Length: 253
Ligand code: 13P
Image (tube, rainbow, N blue to C red; front, side):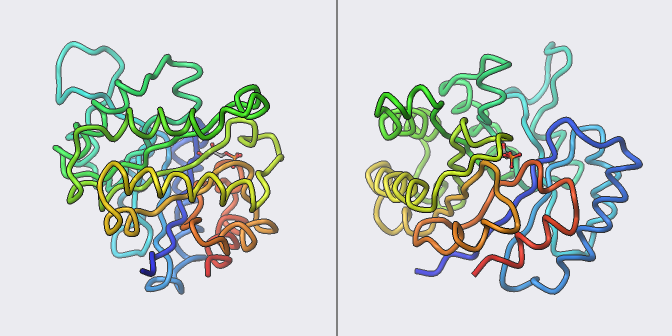
């Protein structure tokens, strides 16, 4: 089964609208040749989604959001719902990023409710999992990602699951310049795929794309993306420069 590589840029809390428009234009132009081979998305902050959507019209770059609320509407001051994102032309929503877990108290059960909201709105989830340095050093990596994955995915059918993307992001590799070695990453990715087969079935597990995230750069992307179970990348810092991001996109096999 060949899975189409999927490279997504998570801009986090960066870029004003003016800056976001300029970067989105550069990214759109820089990756226009990979249309068939690689799927590409960018996740600007909420404030820039609407203007950036216009820049990406008729391009091969999809729009992603970095979070959403689990409810469709209501008294949740400061939150944004999945239907609101859909209206803006968003396709993907990143859920359960470690920064949301760490700084905003996000839990596996909460991520599970957000996945349901995303599907109901006709959007697609990128579900993030990953261990801290302390957990890795204690030999708990595989059990930590298992709990996170099963918690986030419970209750969804195999047919729904086939469209999910999972992102393995070891917390110790995010923004630190320390990348997991391709062997460390592949080990976890293979484990995640086996877990997906247990949650759903082999066929579905073979369809789900599993991205790696954590200090992915132009010079380590090819090695990581060359691993059997690494189907793409979720890129933070390097996605803020169009040339760096495009180089990662082009490194996909
Ligand atoms: P960096 O690429 O900056 O390490 O960030 C990774 C990440 O958190 C993407 O979601």
